[in-house]
Image (cartoon, rainbow, N blue to C red; front, side, top):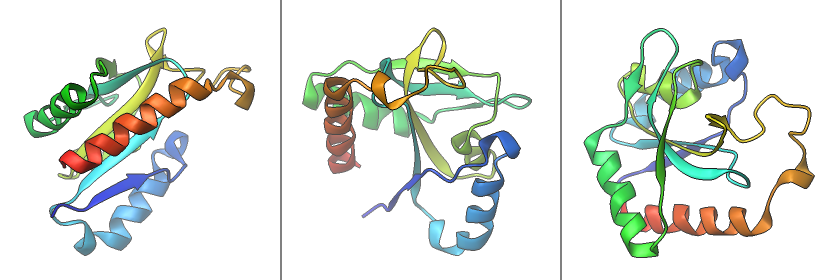
Length: 144
């Protein structure tokens, strides 16, 4: 009976303005929920971001890691662990405000696949990768 909120609020480069406004507006609704930030699911290797945040890093809770492990076992799909300590994501901002968060990301070369590159285009989305990652996210939801 846990609510799960997926966030794609934009404004990450503007100090997470979208996430700030969302949490301010829905603070009462978010109690006991889990916030999931999805990035680059159509490319790279699927990872849970275990440590993130630029100035003050936050780590993924053991509860969230347990959910990931159970979903990996159920789907026979390996999920790696990555770090994004060079920027604040929506998930890291929410974690700093005390929310349970999970950041799933297709990683390539130590960052979200094609993040802020000229080749960050629809044609670089791999349909099979996206399908497998979406199936994993659906299994994860069943476990939560």
